[in-house]
Length: 140
Image (cartoon, rainbow, N blue to C red):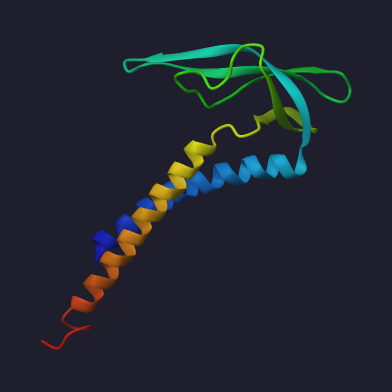
């Protein structure tokens, strides 16, 4: 019965990553401040598979401080154009903790969905093994 338990744990990791990132993003939306920012550049991240581009956004806090935020979500092609106006959520106590509205939503949904499917498969396998176990489900 170790196999299904490991499958469930693996699914929980995927689900937890997606849920944790979603919580962080939505918490910033609910409890942070909102302002308009502007994409001032694209940070290029290249590897053997090609390049992806993360937006670099400039925005101002209420006290007039200019903050530069580089998204941790990169895509190819770029999700934003330089000069594009975007909605930014940020922590007023620590404005460097910011997020562009909607960024990473596909990534989070994919992790939650894959994790959920893996968990369901693990639970199904666990239940099937439990029913077929000679000392539990069926008489020998």
